[in-house]
Image (spheres, helix red, strand yellow):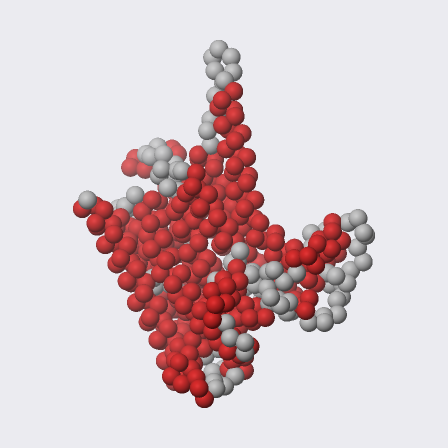
Length: 473
């Protein structure tokens, strides 16, 4: 009973820290916006002037919400309000815009400008609420992975002070993605694995995949989970027992269905983009492309209430439509954002590499520590003589793939945002601060202090930059 009460106090404490973190971020962003002139006025142009009847509610909106609608948040807001009007909008997955619009529907006004204001308010509330839920979810997940309440608490507490703090409160996918990822993995990794918890975990991981393209990397921890829980196929001494084989086949059929559910949002997003922008292409009547375009008319408008279908759009055949695997997402990322193998390796991008360097170093250290523990556990050496935790191995592989791709193919500065959804990174930092591993020593404590200091700098500098439309990570 005392242990359960202590656990609940830990959850409430982390939730309180997360709420305080969000309040501080929103207020600090508002103050920065108030005292520093904006570099760009795109947000004000989108929202326009408040009507005289707006009163104090309108002033509160201008003060606390509009400073958080910057950069990519404008795209998410535009998609939520009007649908995918332009090709470059498809760089953003539909999960967050759909959720913002759905939650706004009961109160959605007829005026486009007023509707955008309401959706922006709902989006900011949603992001901050998801952050609090993500912090509690990380604590729950870390308790399972670390088997140490102190390490788990420090991991969740550090998550409440992220370098990407301002993005966690804005109309970005960071908070919602972390929330779905942490709770999905926590349900997947439950000590008492049940069918309902596994399916719910997979659905949450699928929801994460509807928010961002890197959600498909959830297939990696899912694979290691299914390998770890796979029933063995052992031949009997006197003949063959078919029951283990049937269980084995059933397990992997179920695992394949889990993988399909996680990949489905990405596939639907690409198919939707194809159906919208490839109508001007001359495909053969019996081709799968023609089939998709014919069926698109039947479901047009189900994803968003308005799209290019309803705007008298003159269709052209875009170059990516005729590729073997037509991907509007890959084309848009390369064409409009310069994403591609080593395209970002330019001298003018050196400041962005420096922005990402502290995070990259910590990711590298977390990776090295995890693999060192895994190899030692497999060899059965000393105090590491335990069974290999394949959950952590799966998380390590996922983090390595994500970090490698971001550094070599993407805008490297977004690394600080993308890796915030990795429980392995926070678990490593929590272990350093909790001093739960004597092998870390003085160097570990020093590195933990450096990480906290770096996070604090980014925590306070981020709102100053982002809130005034200045370039940030």
